[in-house]
Image (cartoon, rainbow over all chains, first blue to last red; front, side, top):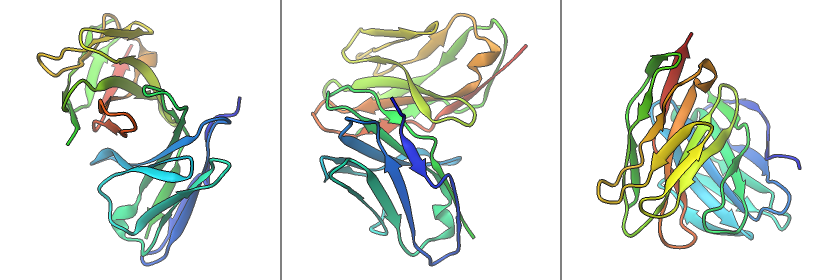
Length: 113
Length: 113
């Protein structure tokens, strides 16, 4: 079974630009969550999608948005990039049970210059 | 809201030493508790979990007991190996169905031979 796939692996952007990151979950998984990982703040929850609907949202500004397609693939978008958006963005998928474990991708490393 | 606090790292140990990584949480009701591990260059993976008070999760020699009275879920291992060097994350999912998985900031463990 293929794991969670995130593309691209690395990305370099400049301030003010926008970026779109992609996540393909494990086949059959309908839940996709996004996290931002930085050395200072650790893992911060961005949002979760389930069956194309945003189910949960963390405390990030509106510049961060996401969506999920009918095949469960998900994208997240960050507009008007700031230097502080430099981070590793992790995507995770899971099944439908309450305590289903999350399967994480290797992440997209975003650098904003 | 829900939150997780875990001890700051890094933790540096010699091989075969005893490991404890402290984790406390704030949540209403009875959340589910998890430990995830991130090996260098890889995504996070579930290490163990406990879904009700007094449950003990265990895997690969690691253990953690869900203590409702102290709101804690400390990770322990009796004898660490060099291969245990990684970042360890304590996480919580609220008692209500459909809530997001919230992580602590992570604790870096470095084991030397």
